[in-house]
Image (cartoon, rainbow, N blue to C red; front, side, top):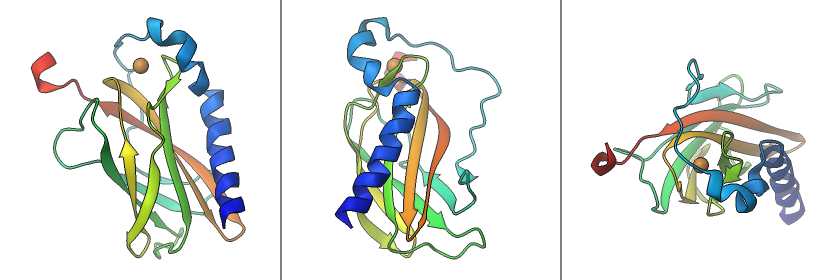
Length: 158
Ligand SMILES: [Cu+2]
């Protein structure tokens, strides 16, 4: 169990590295809000790249907070729509335009309903375009799915 979670995290980290996740420490000074590219696919339900899973990301209700630790929900289903229970799920994210990751390391703490996982410890340090990566492993199947998400400006900054 532990070894396979390490594998999933390694996969996730590798994907994050490819978008420059760890460069954040070096480039924070260059990190300013820029408008996201047009025509981003913002779909929060996606088939995983190898079609092992159908994944739905559920942001917090209301406005997504900035600089506050909060939770997300991830629903994992098989391609035919059955809940994927007892899967290893890992979520992380970064800002592709800035080369930095999240300031926290989110973790799935509970499966709150069959195939529905609670991700705690999510924190965005900026508004703008984030890539959220969801790694799922269930038995021999594992996949990392990328989502685009726009963290809105906080109301007082608009
Ligand atoms: Cu940034």
